[in-house]
Amino acid sequence: MQKLTNKEEEIMHILWKLKKAFVKEVMAEITEDQPHYNTLSTIIRNLEEKGYVSYNVFGNTHQYYPLVSIEEYRKKFMSRAIDNYFNSSYKNMVSFFAKEEKITADELREILAMIEQKK
Image (cartoon, rainbow, N blue to C red; front, side, top):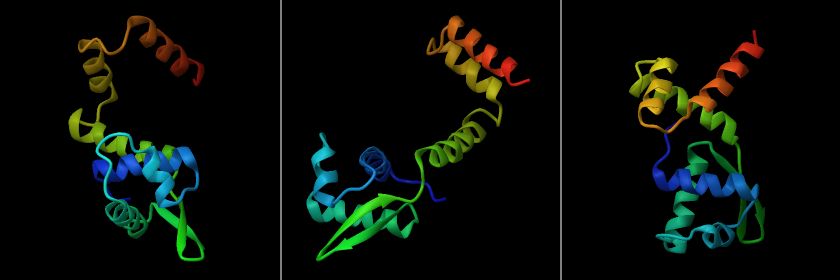
């Protein structure tokens, strides 16, 4: 699974949300820095070449849909981020968020309870 650019990832989030969409429907979902129609079409074709999307043909147009689920993508790239930024340590990742005050003690207790329930 290839890494996506920020714009490709934004488009994938739209396709995950819509499930199936024509380029004009994807365009309607982009609120900031809306690309030209042809540029958006090229980005979607790049996603197709990377194996992230496929399409159904309707006359002269294509309706695109994701081939990769958001869960598959999240798992792959969260693992890569943890490897690259936290020395493959989930403990380092959680402590980073705790130090940055992005996670509360109550949330950590909830996570611990979830871990203990799986034992």
